Length: 256
DNA sequence: ATGGTGGCGCGGCCA
Image (cartoon, rainbow, N blue to C red):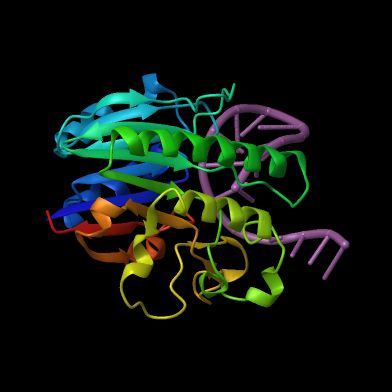
């Protein structure tokens, strides 16, 4: 069995003890992190290695930043989307064993029709083209991370209130569908799931306690990996810890 | 309609 997880940690500096605890108890084979919010020189490599993981990262000061922790060493790393001149560190592609792992922190988009929204849609278009290319070379591909898109009304605590809003707009959902149409599956939906399962809750208004969440952290698997799918679990526990990230980990397990 | 909370870093941006 191979387990592959994603977690937007909202500052790895703050959340490192939680990441190490969680790795210790859950022992994922691969963990994609987003919003590490630190530069490469600041990456806590020794602590991660002491916990039994290798790490690759594309860091940035204050904002963004992505990393992949893995039991096996990652190779063939890409940190930039072809066709997009962008200093923001939001992508990290790497080969681990016979898997191609593509970790993304999709732009939030702020508000529909804002500059950041158009940047988000452009970023997603470039990601689409990149995934299409990567699938040709790497059929055993997993695309995972913080997509900042709730795929469906089922993935939103109050779909009516969120209709057409950022994270739920038609253009964002179409962009996600275009990604899926390259030949990927939302692994969470490959098996029966309980209702009202979310991966992100706003810090404000007691969002977590009231389960006012969205499912925006996704693990998308290519056909070859979907055929080996066993389960996809949202682990709510870290969201309930002291000083949590606003996101909680999502874990997909493959029978390989 | 606004603001509410958190991280970074020390004012204001981003989510």
